[in-house]
Image (cartoon, rainbow, N blue to C red; front, side, top):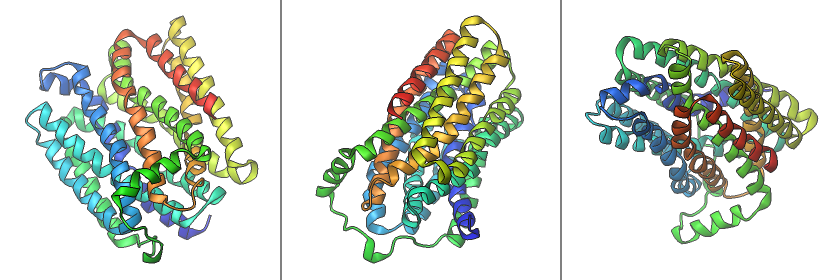
Length: 384
């Protein structure tokens, strides 16, 4: 891949990593946050649900905006708001205040996510877009590997509020890098006039296109699986298997290597076998991994077999994420920002329902959690 594409994807991946970091870095802290606010684990998990809902619904608001105003200025504004919201979360005196800060943090992440997906689509199409998405996901995949481990260490040493301060610092570094390295990818001549009356008609037209809707729903199933896995992991690994917050972070991050490997392999394979075929292979890996996790849970085989299933499923997830995203984004030749917004909104609003469900099922034990993952994988296989 050309060096220019590498630099471009690396800069976008730094931005895209903020959202996963804001999700993964504080997972090991959830039990302690529940104790600090004198509430239940399920209530504290609303901080995750609120973030995901805002990051999903917010994209519907920002898609037409970035088609009208361009990419660069909204991107820099979103990164600045992310920094401010992270500082507010660090100082939150109550759970309600923290939920509000996470809402704003999620909206800022929504804006930046719409921009980076639109920038890729501005610059490439088809297999080339799939390769850039795969490279972006490969680099971005370092976030779920490093963030939980880093968060576990920070939590053990300084507490969960320090994690929010670290997120603010990461946001500031990303803002500076973006201001220095990323230019505008949407020329004024290609921008669409912001007309609120036509926004919903545009979304309706895109949603009615089966070439968009099928990979979009499949991608939503992928993210439902991912967030169901994320939301239940801290409780299952720490309460049922007795891991400390530090060990949980290292284990959770280690499993995340599978996502990175899947994304990297998909970028290598799409030019040889086609984007749709590679997506199908990824879905099969996710289904097989989920089935293995169910077997581990029902048989009482313990942590090693469960982790084998998780690693296989996450490898397939890395393959599916890049390929399905490229299929959905390449289905439209205009209103690219709105396409990115609708895709992101569908996947995150649907998958956000996984977090309270997974939080409840995790308290029932590994078998119940594994069955929820297998159901999401089965839906994914059907759509793919």
